[in-house]
Amino acid sequence: MTSRQEKNAGSGATAEQAEHAQASSAHGGAAKPRIRVVAAEITNVHGHFLLTQRNMRAVFPLLWEFPGGRVRDGESESAALMRCLRDKLGVDVIVGPVRLRVERDYEDYVVELQSYVATLQAGSPRVIDVSDFRWVSVDEMKNYRFPPADKASVDALLSVATDSDSNDPA
Picture 1 (cartoon, rainbow, N blue to C red):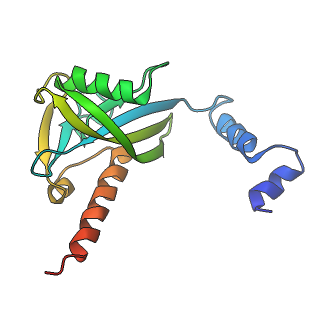
Picture 2 (cartoon, rainbow, N blue to C red; picture 1 turned 30 degrees about the horizontal axis):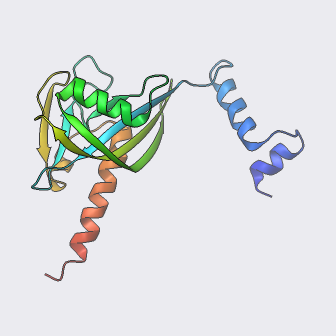
Picture 3 (cartoon, rainbow, N blue to C red; picture 1 turned 120 degrees about the horizontal axis):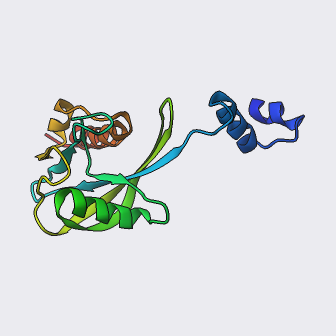
């Protein structure tokens, strides 16, 4: 039995119920709100990734991120990603498989980020509801500042790039 199971065994509570109770007591009896967010990892013919710069009015203003946004109530993740990219950059995409799931606990809320592989289907990116956008190589990503949840996606890409570089016979 794990220590968490042992703690909860006497009360009859499951580990999930205990975690919910802990989260509730830490925030005045209410669990932290959970915000579902989606992001797209889109590459061009040169293998560069599309990054967008957050607006000045956004949380983490002017930091860089993979394009995407919040999932609305009743909306699927893929529908949200297609809507966000159309609204923010004027492009249509084909949403592929989930590449990464990250949960990030902030002081007042929890962000659940799902990053998808996506392909541009129609349109060229334009600045509509972002401050800027850039096509960036994996090596160049270390020169950009990202919000904590997006940093996990960047770290994963950098790790893959480093692993493939170390396998080169050069």
